[in-house]
Image 1 (cartoon, rainbow, N blue to C red):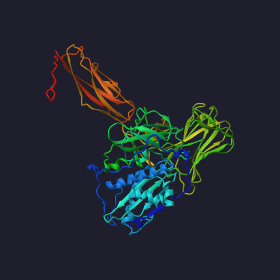
Image 2: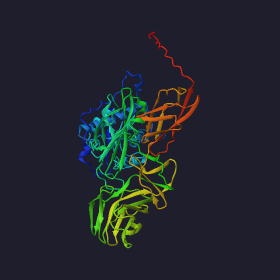
Image 3: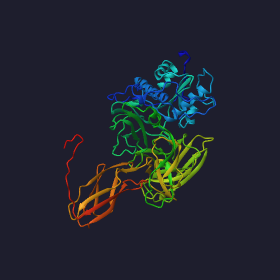
Image 4: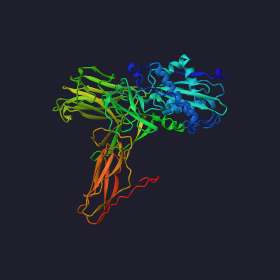
Length: 628
């Protein structure tokens, strides 16, 4: 029987991929990795049902790859970890588990078992598609997808051994260019099954990985590996990460920016359970990537939750909700950008003829600008991978040292499909002030039907000089809603979203999109104080405040006799009864976020009872055993 369970190989569609040697570093050597998780048979909550335990569809039945049985979920998660341990042993960085690749792999394993005759061993599915097709079909944003398979059910250890003993499969598993992985196990009631392993690369994405994707850890100290970027010269690309911050909060409250390092040690918060660690990186242009990973801290891993926690963090979503509040002003619309930017330092920027030079400029977005300083100078920055058939606005960020002339100075343009789709000639007087950067918008839609190039052009048509910083690309304006929602072209993966508000030709500064819901929680339904008439104030009362994604909080009182202040994560309230009449007095404390976000204030009712006299008595405490 073992000889009939064969490894099956699928290769990358392209082979011209590169990755820097620095990206191949292993996790911090001083943080040992947990051993591969094995269920404890003595723990009844972790006992696995005997195989086979999967759904048993007929050859024509539908199949939901987003669900899986605990035994096969465990096989999938353990295989991911064993792959990463194997890569570590060969000096390679770990792969991040990806949900879209997981469901694609599960579906193919089901299809190869239930819709194929016994003995099928291949990589083409019954729809005629291949690994590079199935990734995008299930929402993965890249077709750079390789595949290893086992044409039958084997354990994770047997799978790793088989793939490593086959040269082609070994090359796939140890490909230094891969960044993500998805495992799909399937096994039916007859014992027949299939295993598919997706290995993929999405250039604009880099995620954080806890302990090489271990399922659990017995100790709070874990290693983190944050995937990072080599320069990728497209609007969808990133520059090398310069800074990072790490937190167990998605909004990084209290976390400081530090110099980027791919390996990092982290101490998990106390208490057994699933722990989510967030990592955010930032490049020289302010573009950010925010990702997270999950690990179980403790021994009693709830295996039926592996799908929900261990495999879903790296999921491509199509629509995001943003909780930003517009700044003051009569704004009528909003624009979005997934931090799309083209810069003078991109490899795709070129001065074709005339006079130009790169100069350091502290006011430029990336620290440099390109100075164009003679009539006839022509330059462009191009892309072939940008989003097509979607109305956009390109903002050319330029400045000139002299803004007094009414003569034509520079013509900016956008070319697509061998056509100039937008252009504008600027005079120096069109700049509001000398030596200050200003943005000039051009609307366009990228059409690549007969020409793959999208070009942003700069032509000096007069005497003078212009400094080119960047082209920032945003969607055309859409109406303001509360909260904001955006269907992100090609999906959202944690890349920073920029928001800009508009009203006609007026545009706001750029704001970072807030994709995580803010919250303020106080563990109280109210406060009651008792005080004597003209007597001393009663003791202050404390309440714990849990705030997330608010930039902190502030408190206001509705009455002069009620004061409150913040003490760390606690609210401290005090009343002053002096001068108040005998009776009951009511007021409220209102907690609001420091940041401008869509969040209703939290109102805490406060009651003060002022009595003629307050008699205090001290009663003895009697324990259950009679002790005093």
